[in-house]
Length: 266
Image (cartoon, rainbow, N blue to C red; front, side, top):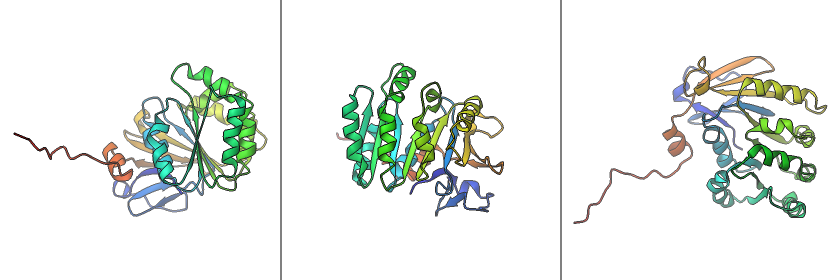
């Protein structure tokens, strides 16, 4: 099962693993999502939440069900073929679908061995479309049905602050179900305080919450660093993150064209 990438072992040689919050493989350090319940990521605009957190999690996950927001369609475009090859059933919920169409899609996923469900929003007034979408009665139906699936579910909700002003009763089911692992992306500490306020007003929300912040927008952390904070124990750890080329080509294994090899035909 995938975990949140924090950086390479070589770039973080001074970090000593003291508990099961942070785990490692041969090359990289990760936040252990088996140990965590919910993680809030504070990533302001243009700090590459999708590239650094969302896509690595989505592409490396091969066992859990996945529900992920997709605001412009490129996440679906860049990942759906790979997930099909990994044996996932692929489905998409969109604003323009009828209630019956959405219910039919959800029913097909209920007994699936594993699935990826993209919550699709088009470019435009995202706030209005999300408000329309999450107030749709389909969401109570969605989690009522999909929580009966025996598999664990990884849920990645980008731009979560937009959900604050909507009717979010369905989140009680999302929070309560112990097999779910949820990643929320917010943009600043004010939104995080609002998130905690909402959480405290949901009776079933007793989940452990952890916080990840990107140093590109927080001077005290430093550029291209990630700070992980265990809010329960009030402990923080700072990690040097991967350079973009290492993330793309070495970690995610994307094909790199060798531009130095050029054949000139005469």
